[in-house]
Length: 528
Image 1: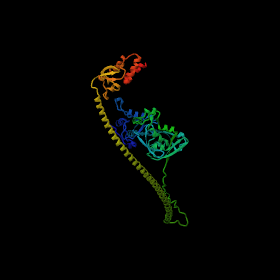
Image 2: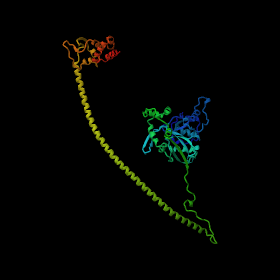
Image 3: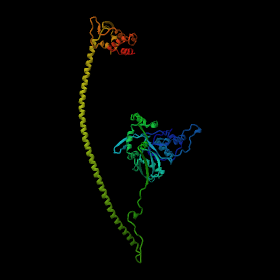
Image 4: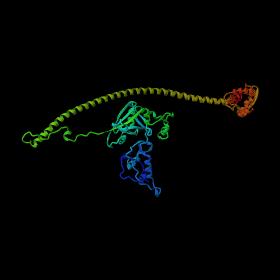
């Protein structure tokens, strides 16, 4: 069993000499969707073509289903991107070397993991924005420069905006039908309302198309920066896996209306129309005539009769050579003067440029020194503030330590007071407004938040009467209901009086003793 690992992306231009049959291809590439760790790009390929390749390369399961040696045909990339899938560059380069690319298709690729990309804003400030391989699609009009005003000769081209200009040169050349080695001059044109901005793209540039696009559409940088906090539009949310990592990191807005959109949609909303115009250029070649090429001019080798005899060939040759020498001296003198003038201009320009750069450098040094002084002052101020804060922190820590010590001391004293005031007997005698009652300490402390629970908690001393009872200056008529509630809880409600007047009197007693459960019950009964 073969196991395909990875290939260098530099092999994308290789072509296989002996193309193996599909069955062997499938043994080498077992999973075309598998991406290598070295893959930076993933390339579009027609789903139907890949399915056909997979079916012809499928392993035989019976004598009737043997692998076919039928030719698959060149690699196909569809115009509509939903009819394509994307595979890693390493697998795509191998399939391309075996099958080549269909003449009606052009290469389309995008980043495997886009990440953050550098951009320069209108003011020259650098920033990084999170690229999106699904959304950053640009729909442009492509044509020859001379056909700019001929809509019937325009092509609609879909491209990934973060790809390099160098990559798209080949695609532009193919779409407008120019030979492979033709040199191009590429113009990026942005129409906005009634204005038109035209920028010439540098040849063989490794800058992204997005960088140049932001030059003609300055608002685009702000949109890309703001877009990082937005959710995907509902119609795109299920399709775009790139949103998952962003959402899990917590970068998405909570507002469902604040959504992301395709790049070309955003440009349409901002009333931009983007066009690419190309023209083929050639480099002029120097002349091949020796004498004309060196600028000597025409030399007359014909003989003009001036006497009875023609001159001897030696004399004629001498005359020609003298003429050439004379012309050469004149040319050398003229060229010497031209070269001197050009050199002086070059030196003057270099000196002027050097002075300009020197002035800029002095200004930057002065600005750096000013900023350094400002930073030093800020650092001094921060150090002074830090010293003050450290002193305050030290005092706070000392105060906190003293507070904790004092708290511990007070808690210890409180514990001792409770121990001293704690009632030893479990049975308690009460004198409530002249009515005698006997109950237990557990009953009286059943509700620690009540007045009775507070009195007998041991935290405060309570004076006893001569007979050993504790006097409470309240009406003792309804106190038995208070004790029943403390003993039995909610089950004592059935023994409560039914008379409303008696219930109101009992409600006052419950309010005094702060028995919340009994208060709630009585409020409901009296209120009904």
